[in-house]
Image (cartoon, rainbow, N blue to C red; front, side, top):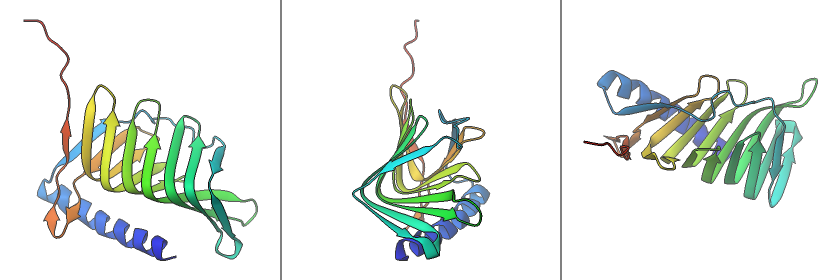
Amino acid sequence: MADRAMIGRLQVRLGAILLLACAGGAANAQAVSALKGHNANAPVDFSADRIELQDRADRAVLTGNVDVKQGDMTLNADRLTIAYSSAQQTQVTRMDASGNVVLKSASETARAQFGIYDLQKRLVTMIGGVTLTRPGQGDTKGGRLVLNLNSGLATMDGGTVAGQRGRVTGRFVPPPRSN
């Protein structure tokens, strides 16, 4: 419960930071993700050292070496809370990951402290020390990464730490050019 509250507070703070950053012209990077068009309706397979079902709260908590796979996307974390609705048929609506979060697709890897996968909105949000790696294309680092699985738009902002606005940083390697 404390983790969920902390993630909620982080989301609110980072949302406000993003609005301020956009207004203030802070660093912001955008790219197209390899997860564009990801099938969010594909079955979700998971494994973990432990699972705790909290039916009255409509959630399941997986801990220890959590591995989740949906189509060509995998998620690894120390802990994962799965929120679902059980009105008529059990339907997973959201997954909140924390601790050593790694999201992989066929051609990119994102690492962060927290990850949120909103299955209804088809958005993946990575928060805290985010690194997006595309082999052979370089790395991008920032405070928050939002992947839109519909459009493939990947947006990263710098976030704020100790009152200081962060920046998006990165490195790319230009292709060889002949003179």
